[in-house]
Length: 202
Image 1: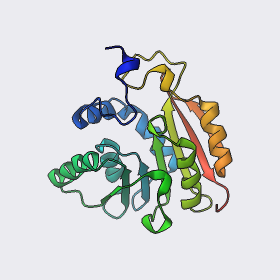
Image 2: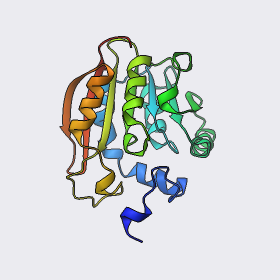
Image 3: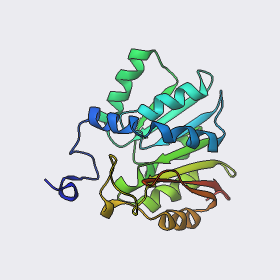
Image 4: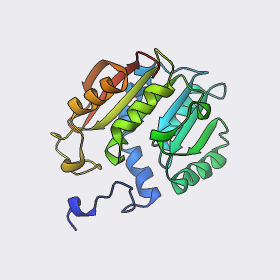
């Protein structure tokens, strides 16, 4: 079956083990994401679209037991996969939250920064997610948005070209939501990241 036909935004064409394996292939990008946020021991960070949780585990190691990770995903099955891994590894400072990121409320979150990585192309309302993040995060808070570049070679696990978001579009959505775009970087031919900062309370 052609890639274009087999791709589904809700990832039902893949098992959560397969999604987890794909998350691992992006491990080399994650250090720069975390460094851009200045993540350190004791911080509390939100991961939007955590899926089965590879990045959540990496974040938990970075912030330590004195910090916390809020792993948000709309799939309870994905977060059940993460829960199993947490129990296996004795990790208690990851909070799992089944929710639509575009509809989260301030009472649900107590975080310093956010990662919105490789998730907007799955969303029905990507601009709505960014608007809600600008509303939820405190003024001055940082967030990293990372996506697959539509001009990339598409030779790594990821969405087909037609489902990829242009960096200009992501930056425009971010600005409209109330973020300041601090930097843009093409991390690899297939991947880019945008560092944004909340400028006002929405």
